[in-house]
Amino acid sequence: MILIAYDGSEDAGAAIEQAGRLFPGEHAVVLTVWQRFIDTLARAGGGMTMVIDYEEIDRDAAQAAEERAEQGATRARQAGLRAEAHTAVVETTVADAILAHATTVGASAVVVGSRGFSGFKSLMLGSTSHHVLQHADLPVVVVPSPQVARARAEHRSTLRSAGA
Image 1: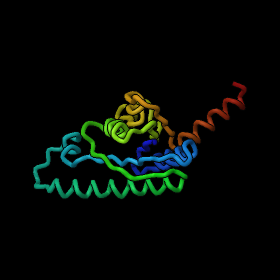
Image 2 (image 1 turned 30 degrees about the horizontal axis):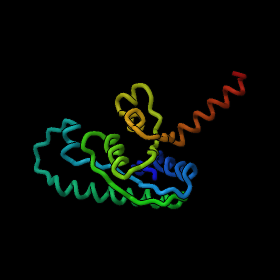
Image 3 (image 1 turned 90 degrees about the vertical axis):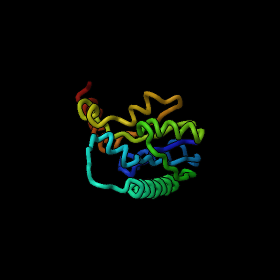
């Protein structure tokens, strides 16, 4: 069984499609991770003084995560996987939530998409796929975003043409 991290992005969709090619017919858990609103505020350093119904916001976030996970599971079934939708709440980081859930469900591998950030952008925005890869105790398949994959293929083609 594999675990596929899915956030609804084009990159996550590419990861599902690649997982279908690499693991046809495999049982897959499609996981969407969400974060409690109070934790989002704490991480953002927001000092809001208005009254906010955190529980309602969290219920809405959990519901949206469930819908997104089901959307991912549907895509995974269309890609030839036997998929089910799961959600998990972030306790520390998204990557840690992915790895913890992989352990909980007994996954033999994790599949994640990657936006291909490097340098300063990666430092500022973080890299969930990099964190998963660096902290996993099971195989991890990192699927580059379609744009990054095209750019890398064009770069290799240019190098071949130049005789490098």
